[in-house]
Structures are given as C-alpha cells and as structure tokens.
Image (cartoon, rainbow, N blue to C red; front, side, top):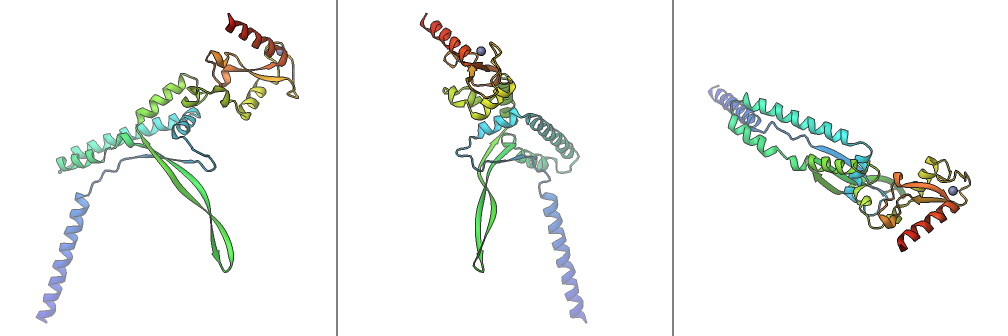
Length: 242
Ligand SMILES: [Zn+2]
C-alpha cells in the first residue's frame, strides 16, 4: 500500500515538474512574429526573369497601394508590440526578443516560382502532375519599393526602369505595343488623318526620335502613314545634317 502511494506521489511530482517546464517554455518563448509581406510571382516560361523588372510591372499595375497598406500594418504591429512590452513583467527580456525579430530590411519577400510538370508511373500508366518550385527569392525593404515607385511615377508608369534606361529602345517595340498604339490611334495617321484599317502603309512613329533620346513608350508613339512618316524622317535627317 505504502509503495503504491509513493509511486503515485512520484507521478504527481513528475507531472508538476513537466507542467512547470512547459509553462516556463511558453512564457519565455518570443511572442513576437514579424509580419512579412510574401509575394509569389509565377515566371513559368520566362527565360531569365529579372526581379526588378517584375517588381516594376507590379508597381505599374498599381500594386504600390498594397505595399503601402502592408507597411502600415507593420507600423501598427510595432505599436502593439511596444504596448505589450510596456505592460510586461519581463520588460528587458521582451524588448530584446522584439529587437531580435525586427527585420525591416527584408520585410517584403518576392518568390519567383515555376510550374514544372513531372510524371509518376504506376501500373505501367504514366501520370502527369504539376509541382511549383521556387527558383529565386528577393528581399527588400519598404523604402526600396517607395523609391522605385517614385521613379516610375516620374515616367508615368509607362514602362519599367530598365526599359526606360535601355540603350536599345527599338528592341522594345513589341507586337503587342504596336497593336496597342494602332488601336489607340484608330488606325489613323495622326498627321494627315488617313485611315488604314488593313494596316497597309501604317507606321508606328517615335514622336521624339530614338536618335534624339525618344523612348519606346505609349506617350512617345503615334500612327503615321508612309507618306507622313517619309517626310518626317527626311526632316529628321535634315536636322541631323545641319
Ligand atoms: Zn499621313
């Protein structure tokens, strides 16, 4: 009988010790978790995806509002943590935990992912399935996004920064951009008003010529007919020879 009681007593002591250890771990564990912004960009089929270009494209489509909202969320979170620290009995300890978890320079995380098709074979039947693989990760702070958005704003969000500074502006003239300009200008010469719905003799003209620093962006492009385009290039050539 006495032996049994002793066993029960040991069990109770053991349980109490375990409970104390668990609650100590719970109390000492950091209650702070930095609110990162995670963005997944699917780059399947893109050959050398440039992260800064992808970010510019996001900014050009107005994503900055979301980054701004998230930055506000981080500031609110910090405020909340500070209040929590002030009210804590382990002020110094909590403060160092909080400081350790702050990671403003990497607050915004961009994951480049690729969809890959894989196969598994079972009973002589091949089955395809898709996996998403992260091929690259990019971290930055809010200021980086803010500065980039400001720079893009100064060029009316018309292209990415690397496109804007590209030495080869002619290469940036894509089929899609041509179509966009033709549609915008109603297939009509912006000089003489000739309508060219069949696109015969239709030229996409750089209003400020590339040779004079003109960019391949919508606001610097217009539809011209061959006649007007020809006389314009003659004029530009004349300007250059003078
Ligand atoms: Zn014309």
